[in-house]
Image (tube, rainbow over all chains, first blue to last red; front, side, top):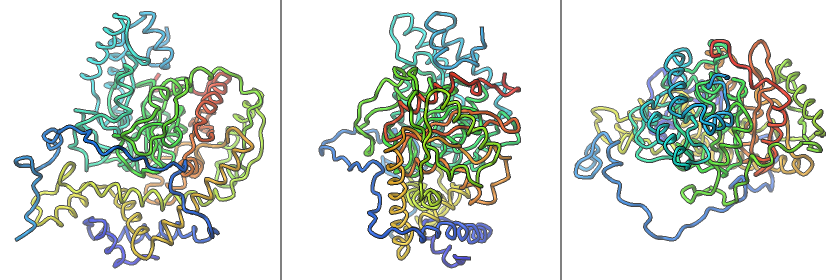
Length: 95
Length: 487
């Protein structure tokens, strides 16, 4: 196994995922297989190769800094489980 | 008259124009088929019957007034990855089971503006992560050619629907083969355009440097018709390419005499089912009989395309899917103790196993100490693979080979082994890594299951691909075969 339970736990914390005990056991096994599989990349000679940034070598466009969006807050908030007075509600963060 | 459900978009357009039937009649006929037959396939997440009939009536009225777009009154299905305003858009996930999109994707908007009638939203692998449709929260889709088999994935609901004659066309998305592989496995045509050709706006993101929208149809001609409507610059997509859109139908009837077809030796090695290889070679012989010449080309880094993909795609997925936090939209865990608990449990409950696996793979390859060894390395190998294609396209116009290593596999066969599942995309992934267009056309059967011929073109080479596909389909009848239970 190239990954142990502790590493998988660390990854799950970084990814903000709560996993059950069975999911941990399965993740250690399957993620290890995936990591072993992608380790093949180490064989490739990539000295002096510039990492790809865009498949068509295009640059990201910039747009003028002007307001283009209209206010759709109420419509967008219809998809939230908990809103009040136009705000999204979450559990208390500051005591 | 041939049943309406058997006709292609181009044929239906002619019938509507002549007044043989109305869009309302056509739409009702297809909705009836879906109502009576989709129990077998599970191809739909949502059927939008009311909206479809209203759109069909509007299209009929437009036609009566002498107006109406290129697709006026023609029915199609959207993969449930495209945001559709006022309609549930789930991306095959529990996470979005309650999500009603407040806006339309550009693809949805453009097709609606052209007069298309949307019959519903098709089932898919969760967040497009899968090659069999088995990762969907809404259950697997079945292959109309054999209900025990997968229709491929991730656009499996789209491919099954078009093969079962629920609609002449469906949209799809392709990040590593998710249009072309399901098309091959269901005997349909699948087109993945050049990266940036079709807007990604409103298409729920998986791996943004690889994702591209396209179509599944039964003829190359229909794919050309739809691409002409879908393609084009969109300022709302930061990687959309500003290039004029040709009339893809204008040159589709031209001969392919003199077309240089590249053959990659490694495509026909031990990894390919032998009978599938025979069908594909027969198809290439048909292209030769039409005046094409074949040239052997070498893609030396091809073997590394799947491992490269399984670093780049999960990395981008882990970043894209960080937006699902249970706060603004999507699944929200109940009775969270604090904000962290809300994040951890909303995501733990809302995502399925494969999506969690990809998020974690991506998180790992991007994490401190591993970034250079995995992500940076993969982007370098990706450049090598793109360079291989570039060299090959100096000598050829298209590259031809198999779309998938075998015909449709049985549901359940590969679900426990992610690597085996990933290798199903070995022939298609290269085009995504290099941003190239690809087309799969039906080229025969192995054990009563369809197989596909895969054509890859140079950047913006869609016209050549579609012409090649169309000319092949003029000589063959494979795409007209219909599964017995869906005639």
